[in-house]
Image 1 (cartoon, rainbow, N blue to C red):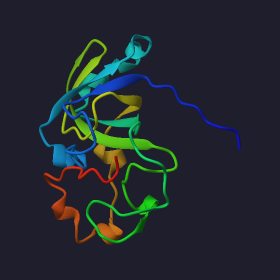
Image 2 (cartoon, helix red, strand yellow):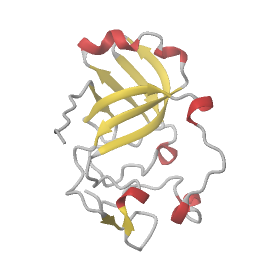
Image 3 (cartoon, rainbow, N blue to C red):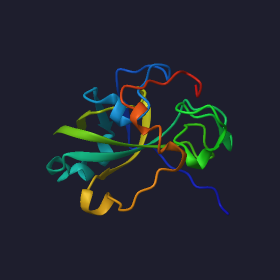
Length: 160
């Protein structure tokens, strides 16, 4: 298979300068604000985005370590398959966060509920649409008994 290359469409700005201390998921970053700077050549694509309350940010986990197929996740002490976790050290270092969209100001987006490190390269933006993005009969595997521990959780630095 041929290699796939992506180029960033912008940069994410947040108060977090390193993995240690960064919220684990957007639920842990409740009310933490930052901004998304979209490069000028992509600004036109932001038209009509301001009508959405939440957006999905896809980004490159530029500070993640070497990819491994087994990881010890933050909420567990057992080795787990990387694809059953949200650990950043993955074969393709792609991150995903659903954040609140507070404002669109030209090519800048003001966002909240942020769990992303400052300077992270942005790959794409998609509107979050509950009617399309929800699922029914949800199971959360090994995380079933641990999801209540996420609120307020910060990266302990193991993945840096």
